Structures are given as C-alpha cells and as structure tokens.
Length: 146
Image (cartoon, rainbow, N blue to C red; front, side, top):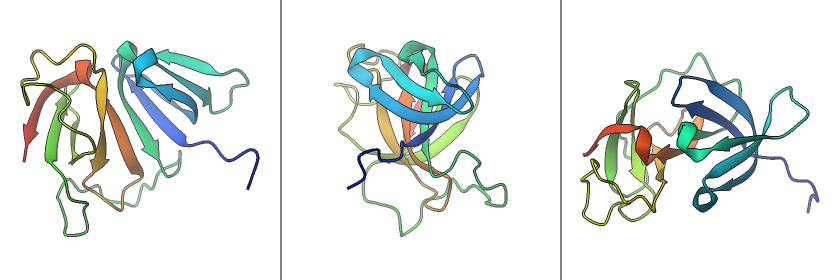
C-alpha cells in the first residue's frame, strides 16, 4: 500500500465566480471548510464552505474538451433520486442524490436545514470529468426532483 496515496483532484467553484483547482487535503462539511493544495502553490488553501457554490471531484484537472456534456439520464446511471439543480449563477446540474433528503420537509429549499450545509450528487453523465459533486445548499436557486 502506498504510504502517500495521490490526492483527489477537485475544482472548487466559489459563489463570486472564482474557480480554484487543486488536490483535496481535507473536506469536513461539519467543520464548514475545505483544505486543498492549489495547483502551482506551495501552501495549502483553506476555503470556507459559505464562500463555495460547489466542489467538483474530478477525474483530471484538465478535463476533456472533446467530451460533449450530457444532462440526460441513461440506463447505466445508478439507482437513486434524480435531481435537477439550478444555481444562482445559472449553472444547471442533473444527477442522483447520494444521501437521504437534505431537508427534513422534503424539497422546500427556501428554508433548508441550516445544520446541513450541502449534499453529494452523482452526475447524470457517467462519461464526464465530474465523478461526484458536493453542492452547497446556500448556492441553490431551485431544485427539482425528476
């Protein structure tokens, strides 16, 4: 077993439009922060969760410009609740909820539970660069169960 396993590459998108790429060091939603090693930087970067829109756990930091993103569900997708998430900045994601409902009363997102900062989403596109996405509740404009 490798004593220094490679870190998970992530792309953190902030609410102000900033994009930070690097390798995940630590992610603890209950501590409300993400610690990452930014690409090309010597010192780790800590990002407060309330500044983030989403954290994209990716296959590579370069991505694949030849891949045409798909928001459609396929027969190869995992079972689970299908969601469409629309962020305040207009970005739309489709995917599968990886956990129980993040709100005690279902999908009433105007008042999400403040003790739950976000949730994991498995993207609908199994061939895309995104493996999983942590969606920060406060960055959501609307969400629909499909």
